[in-house]
Image (cartoon, rainbow, N blue to C red; front, side, top):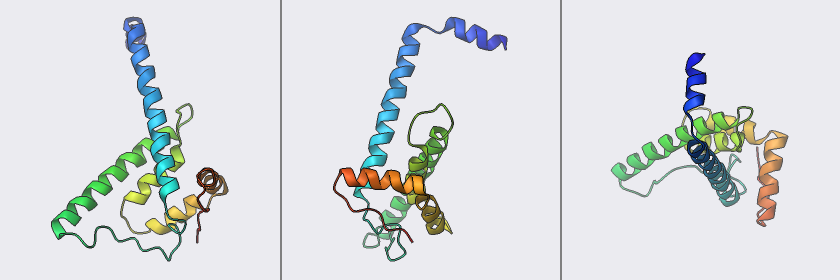
Length: 141
């Protein structure tokens, strides 16, 4: 416990200000990215009729690199979403996890996405956001 008190005694106001600015920038950035993606999604994205192939018309090496990059970004977003879901940490945690899940490929992904989006609070939040930008509500299985 003494390391904590020592650390608190050595922290300057400048460091606190920098940490606060990083906090604000990441909060606003995560909200902007999640909002942008949720508004741009087709209304039937979470419906079973929506096709989900990625870069099928590209060179196989380019497609493979794109799939790897997409999955890595998805994992990063899932981790950030879980952190933002913790009490006291600001941000749209569940929506960020959902965004990460949308990028990662794994068996059972569609069912998990549908379960998350199907929760009344999550679906209501997404549809309220889409309504502000004159987009139709999501269609969920």
